[in-house]
Length: 236
Image (cartoon, rainbow, N blue to C red; front, side):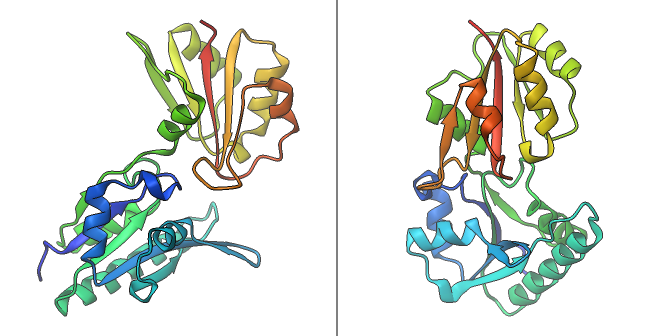
């Protein structure tokens, strides 16, 4: 089996203009591109496909695969395994194949599991880096996320006010991901009147959906979507 024509391509956080030149050039040479789809109820969404469409990519070369949104990871793992098998079969016929991820595939990306399954099959994958969402958030806010000797702590879920306080006392900036699963900690951060800057973001890079505020009361009023991030800094 050829192992030099499978690519995991990161697309950036949502703004089609944030894809790298290398990623776009590689995509254009692909015969087939697999895009992840999420479905909640009747709502089917593929931000990865939306980016490709905005870039003018040929939709006839796109194949969608479902990423089940459940804490039970067995269904998702089977989907990733099935996609890896499909990719391997296409490559056996001499076609160049890519699978894509929003943000960067190596940063809390479920798509990376497809690469893991391919590696288990003895098939190598070339990875092309992208812009992770929290970096795009910093750009939107015009903020210095970390500077000088500061450190960065990224927490995907299940944090506590004590963990955040400890990190801030150690001169760290804290990035909270998956905020829809961390509503309680957001309320605690605001109500405790901590001497911090809270930078709240939704749907960064998505036209007509992008939102940013550092007003604590406004943050509490939001219905927090899945694609949201909170960056916490000590006040300068």
